[in-house]
Length: 579
Ligand code: FES
Image (cartoon, rainbow, N blue to C red; front, side, top):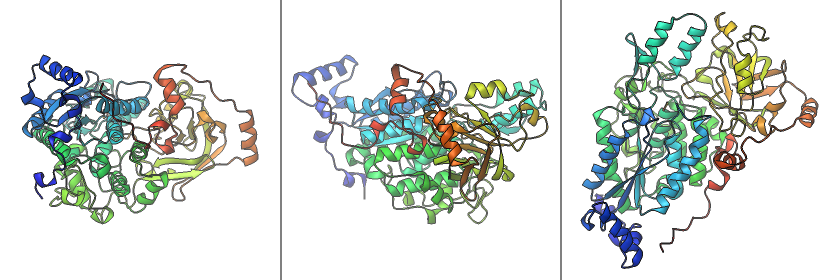
């Protein structure tokens, strides 16, 4: 079927026509103001208006190429007969936004939805990539439900230290532990600072950014292969222009997120994240995305799919290589071609073709980087969902990134009340802790953080680092960076701040993790826990006004995706009146 035969809309059906196409006072104003910007009817009349939603900022190094990419997207929109308009949106920089970029994911989602709704927009190309920008942009676009295509920022080049590849995050944590243990010099540490981030683009390990852009592709929301292209590769520029062209066609075809997203496409995305050995953050974001699309996705879905999905991407932190290697090995299309038996191949994508058609002809060029299913990195997905009296609504552990001895472990708790308490005492020589202890951090969840910061990879106490300990069991209601590793039980729900059982753990209580049994258990009787609950007092609310107060009022717990309760799928919001 050619492009014109898929066409469902004519110029008079365009949403933007309500702003520009009428013979009334308001349309006069809208047209005259376009003329003020030097634009004539030949530029826009009867053409799809495509928003280029750009999360560029001077404080977002992962998106530093987006000014140029926006121009390349616009070129594609013009080529296809559309009218591009660039709309700046909140640039959530994982590096710089405090206390946690996650606090602002929902703000970006709200902004995108309302940017698209309130203005004369027919379709959109969304530019993102740094961790929270992918879910934030997609959540907003799903809720607004206009034709939209996602352009991932692409990973940065491999890091380099004296010819050795360095991975974002993962190698920083690793070298920092060695520095604390006195094993590397200040000069080596300084060289690492020079070589760890060498180009525009998002983190080039299989962190949250690489996982979520792959999730976007496997959901069907990017063009084929878009998520794997390094940010500075010329293919990335061509992909940007193709996104612009395709967005115009999608407007004429009226191909919207609601035509693409389904229970099956979400299963594809979960399976993809698992086969990549991807970030635990994808669990929260996928539940939130599904909530926007009106699809039911629960923690148990991840566990069910994890048990049947092999980890094939040999990329750090679970594996050895980096995203640049993954691209040269064939990228996501090649990986998906290895697991076609686990995918719903007939799911439609923004390309107008099915995901099965999108990966036709894809091949693996390096079987070390993208392993065959009969030689996986791990036979099961690296992520396990845990339940037990310490996490009645669930918790998460990335087993593939932990030392195997800790996957079944029982040890005494060493409890930290919050991050500041942990930072003050973790390296104290007098802290009673050994390699069998279980480090517990509370007040780090959606409300406790606030914003569920990535504090879940608690540092190993210095005195244990010096003795050669590199992993310990850690339990918290925090998240962890997708580039992190270790036996870290995360996302404990409900969180301690709202009186989840984590709030009642005391130093010396025995905590047991059994990944095989999917169990997280606090060896304290129900009666004693009830007594502790009686005497517990909730911490005070921290923000009396502003966005953080709105966040505290409406954010859901980790097992429900940390979206705002009023933003879940529901009745349509009416189109704006134009008076
Ligand atoms: Fe942007 Fe890691 S800092 S993706």
